[in-house]
Length: 396
Image 1 (cartoon, rainbow, N blue to C red):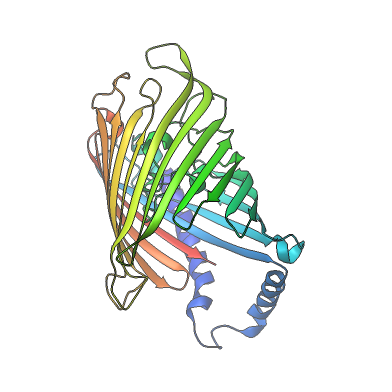
Image 2: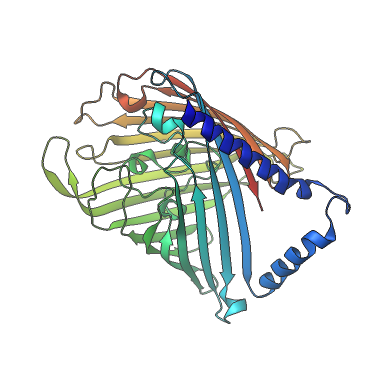
């Protein structure tokens, strides 16, 4: 319990710091925001912006508890924080190089939380949960050509920023709905690990685009490093139907590393495929931002070496459920991971249901209560589990 108590104190202290930082933003009067305190900061920011340098960041706090199930003697409540600072440079303004963008992103993170210690799962119940680290996690250069019909990017980046993306899935706490579990539980480098590599995106038309990339790092999910290079390709179609946007993504991947087989021995190469379909189902005539969106995702991995042989997920997101709360969001999603028959899983699948309500308290601050139900976590003897989480984020 000492671990939980210490982490709780850290979370409370971070909340107080967040509140102190956010109060000037919430205040609307000049008296609440003394010019003497904020004018130098604003002047510096404006001067940098004039030269193409944009500074931004965010603070995220995740609190969690195992409400039911899980392993015996859980810690109770636990939490973790993440501080992210980003510098984006427009090379046209700073270096007179048209079409170029440089991005540097650094993070400081405390973890892991109770979910890692007390809840066994193959899929990731919290996409922020990782061991403590302070690092430069992204550093890349992007060049656009031919009126942005071609985008080339090289450097240290998140692979699932470029591939496996899920429209409408980004605000779920679980990683399952912003990436694909068949590959994120296997070899995909995920938070907080960036990967060195490069990719190219070509827009053949307004509706059709092609992407390809190569990366040389692997997920910490594996107890060994297979080496090799991860190659990916994705084709995307997008358009409108009755005035509402839709998108279809079809992708494939192949890794040239050496992988350990569950039945013994090793194999060269591993490959899989994925698909994501998304659409806005309804929106009020008076607003383009509000409405109901949906996604369906599917992915595969080789069962001889990967725990999750196939994954399917689906979700609904309602933005602006009430006219007076146009930026609030309700989300619900279901994930089904089919496990390989070549390992010793007691059950052949691991399922998850997640629901959340994201409250936009005021500019830059969101508060998100979240519930997750897990059936057969890790496909083993662990009982079905309910997780209660709260995510607080302040963007500046």
